[in-house]
Image (tube, rainbow, N blue to C red; front, top):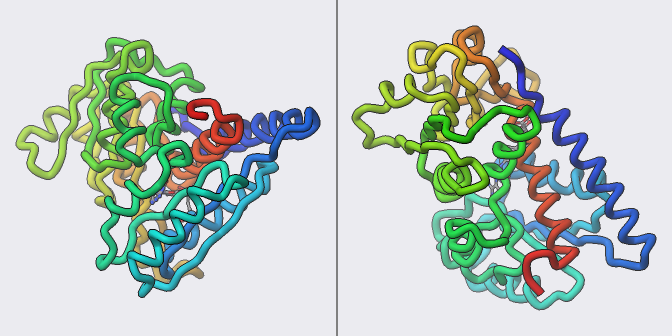
Length: 292
Ligand code: L34
């Protein structure tokens, strides 16, 4: 059981990005600029956005953080998106999810200019990715794909089981893993209505857990020698910690670890790669790699 070190891999990639940015700037080009919109004070979102701003600094990007209280109106938020869409200095931006329940998330996502949608959540990017055209690919699936590639874990012809069908992880992950010349895997997606979930998991060469249920994947669900990717980062109350909580993955690491050939830890696995892939998408936005 080799540990897949997402934190170290992300650090390597951020260094590569920083070097490219300095080359671009030295040649008279523009420093990439990422803006992030954060609504309210959700603990997880605060941490993730803080890490994104910090990653921008490490990569040599310009960053802007736009903050709103949780009672911001949808109209105000749409006006903010309109400003960012038209701001020529901003190459890409994200609106951190989840949003408060009175705001229509899908409406917000569709208001973002798809050419600046470095999260890859806009239907244009989702659709282009589904048919294999150049586009922004959402950061978590892209980060997982990159980890598999950098650890030389074969995917072609392998059985890949994905737990969860969310728009930001499960669905795009399935697309990448089945895509010709990318994953080339045989993909099964299981979710809350699946009746043979455990049996499916046991057949997986690559098991990707993205359901947000701490400790859901137990040793009896994992095939000997499988690769296990844990996307879960649920905050579980823990009185022994200074913060009052600990991060808990979807996989019972201690019992699953001995069975598999590769496994990602939580924290330090998929999370840092998510942020790093957002940086890669922002670099592409700065270079106008996909869209003019
Ligand atoms: N718009 N909303 C938008 N884009 C995204 O890409 C996200 N996501 C998900 C939630 N909402 C979003 C993130 O940024 C999840 N996510 C995310 C990003 C980073 C980390 C986890 C989730 C992360 O850095 N995890 C660290 C631990 C951080 C901590 O201490 O809590 C890790 O090592 O797993």
